[in-house]
Image 1 (cartoon, rainbow, N blue to C red):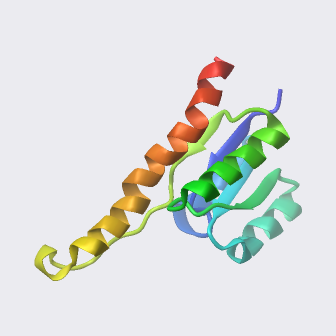
Image 2 (spheres, one colour):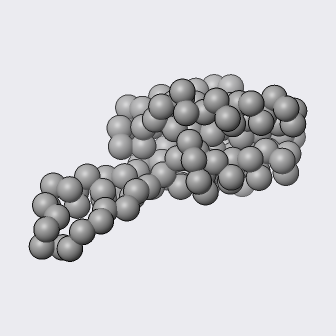
Length: 129
């Protein structure tokens, strides 16, 4: 049975490398990102190394985007074995210089998106055993 992995924030950095590592270990890997145009390098490496990587649009801040992406994956593969919640960003500045709205925006990505995706994927993973 083919194992399926989902990695968020794969357009660069740790997410990019994690998606590659999982695919190299034999996982069918969904490399998700907001802007799939940034997935060209992953697609190129996937083709060159014959890896099973599918670049998929997913804006972790958007509930509908999360639901749509996970539904797409489950419709295709009927399972998810690994979820790597990697998407995130750093807010620079002194606390007194950063607005509460900026902190809320960061928390949406760095905290609530993790909960959102676990809620979407968790029941399927639990039912898989």
